[in-house]
Image 1 (cartoon, rainbow, N blue to C red):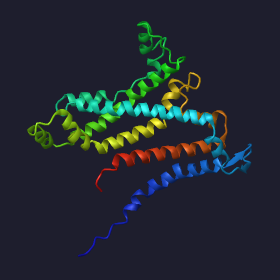
Image 2 (image 1 turned 60 degrees about the horizontal axis):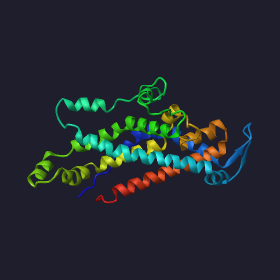
Image 3 (image 1 turned 180 degrees about the vertical axis):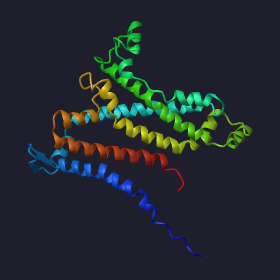
Image 4 (image 1 turned 90 degrees about the vertical axis):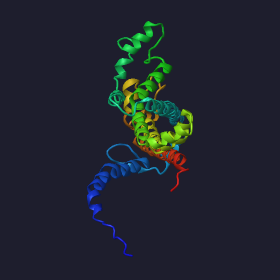
Length: 279
């Protein structure tokens, strides 16, 4: 029996992408690694420091506190958005005119930096009007609550769409068989819907973990890391070290440690969620 020889010409099609990725990712990465082991005092004069900056970052209480805030934020986001997204997807219709309406509703964002302002924002004025003392610019708890609410509103729709896609791919024969067997809605969810959504939920968890763990734009616009350092996540602290203090060596070392933490935790998530799959 003859074996088919694979066509290697396909690599030529992805070669431009490989070159582009090399230019936009590998070269900056090597630059960061270079800065992480050196010290500079201006005029492009560098002095080799070895792993000094890595030791400084890993022993820094500032880094530990920022990492704790980042893990706390990401943990809350995953605990809210994934179950909420699945619940909304389960409640959405599978057929009919309401499908497009529900999908359109789920991709609407909001200008939370204006919505939550205590003086002119609809949310801020409404909460203060009913007697709730709300000012996210001064109250750490209010800042955290607003930041989490903004992210949940913004990104739960991603989980909804992924979960809805997984549910829509389940053949009706599964539900008919479950109905004949007298299965409850809980049993249908556990033994039919949840296993069929496992792959898309793995993607949803990984995407939301990586995005929430590296979030920067939303909190810096909304709270600026404040009040004080209450919402100074790891990404914000990294930018402050790199651009605010212009400490390139420690910032480069912190960014590499940051990258390795994201890579390690993503690998753990993926391994745990796919360990039972039959290869």
